[in-house]
Image (tube, rainbow, N blue to C red):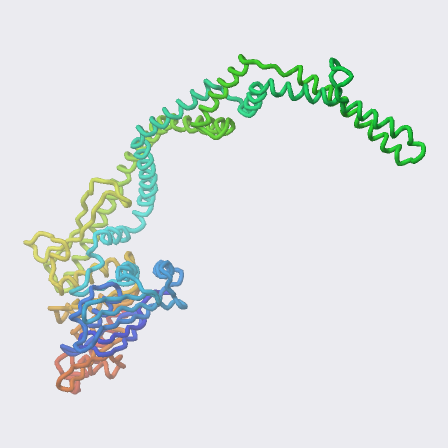
Length: 572
C-alpha cells in the first residue's frame, strides 16, 4: 500500500469559503484564475503537516480556518506507529489529520482523533510529504535530511560500510560512557572502598561468631544473679526433700507428704479399684519430685559467682555491641554486612583493571571508527559528484542553464551516529557567483525548480509518498515548461505529486486536473475546487493558453498539448 493524501477539506482559508479536494494517486495539478486561491491549496496542505499558522490567512469574517485531511497509510508502517504511540487511531489504513487557526492566531491540531502539539504533525510529515512552497520550510533544506538523502542516493555501496560504522559507533559510545562514569567516580569509589575496608578490619578484629551475642547475654544473666539462682535452687530442694540438719519441729517436706498420701491410699485400695490408680499416680509424683530435687541440688552446686568471668563476658558483649551499632541489629546482620562489603570491595578493586581494559578498547574503537568514517567520506564524495552533475543537468532543462549545484562535505571533527560528515547542498545561479546554501542561492520560483530537480534525481533513493509544489514554474514557459511537466510526471511514477501551476504545458502532463473557481457577488469573493473531466480540462487549458476557452483554436491547441504530453509520458 503506497501512502498518499486521499482528500483535503478546506474551510475559511483565504478566499476559499469551503472546498473539498479528492486527490488521486499520480500527478495532480491545481489551476485557476489569478486571485482564485490556488496557493491556499498548498497553504492548507502545509498546515496539515505542521506549517506556520498565520491568522492573516483566515478568511475575512470567519472565526477560524479549518483544514482536514484524509490520508492512506500503511497500518504497519512508521507513520501509523507514531499515531498509535500518542493514542490515535488508524482505521483500515485511513488516517485523519485536522488543523484549525483562529483569527486571533490560536492554532490546534488533531491526529487520529487525538489533540496533539503542532510539532507532532511536523514530525509525521517527514515520512509522508514534502511541501515545496515559497513560505514553507523545505524538507531538503534540513542538513540531516540532505545527508540521509545523499546516503540513499549512494546506494548499496554505502550500506555495508555504514552498518559497520554504526555498530562500531554504538560500542564506542557505550565504552566511552562507561569509562567516563568509572573515571569520573574514581575518588568516590576509592572513598567507598576505604570505608568498607575499615569496617571489614573492625569486624575481623572482633571475629564474631554466629549466635554468640545471644549466648553471651544468657551467660551474663547467670553470672550476675548467681547468688539468687543458687538460693532459689537450694530453697526448692529443701521444700521437696527437707533439710537434714533441721530438727523434728521442722515442717514436713513435699516428698514425705506425697509418701504419706500414697500410704493412706494403699491401705484402702483393696476396697475400691479406683484408689489403685490414684496410688500409682502418687507413686509417680513421688519419683518425679525426687528427680527434680536431685537436679536442683546439682544446679545449686554448679552455680558460682565468678566476677572475673563476668568481666570477660561484659567486655566481649561491649565489642559485639560496637559492631551492631554500626553494621546490623545483631551479629547475624553484622556477618551479612561483612559478606556484602567483601564482594563490593572486590568489585571496586576490579574497576581499576576494568578501566584499563576499557581504555584499550576505546582506543582501538577510535582508530576503527576513523578508518570506517574515512571510507564513508570517500563513498559520499563520489556520490556527491554524481549527484551534482545529475541535478545540474536537470536544471539546464528547467530553464536554469547557468545554475550549478554542488554538494559540500565537511568534517564535523567529531564522530557522530553516521560518521563525521556534514553535508550541505549549495547552488550557484550564475557561473560567477559562489555556491550558496539552497535557501540563499535561489529565488522562490528558482528554489522550487531546484527542489524539483533534486527530487527527480533522488526519486527512489529518498522515497517520500507525496510531493507538493508551488511556483515550480515561476518565470518560465515554452520548452522549459514542457520539461517541468515531464519531470513532474516522471516523479509521479513512484509518488503522489500535487502541483499548483499557471502553465498549460505543465498542467497537460497531469493525471488529474483540479481547478479553483471563484465567485463574486460584487463585495465578497468565494472560491471552490472542481475536478475536471476531459472536455472541461480542454476548456481550462485553452483559458490558460490565452484566455481562449470558448474558441475552437484554443480547444484544438489544448487537445494538442494533451496529446503531446501523453506521448512524452509514454516514452518516459
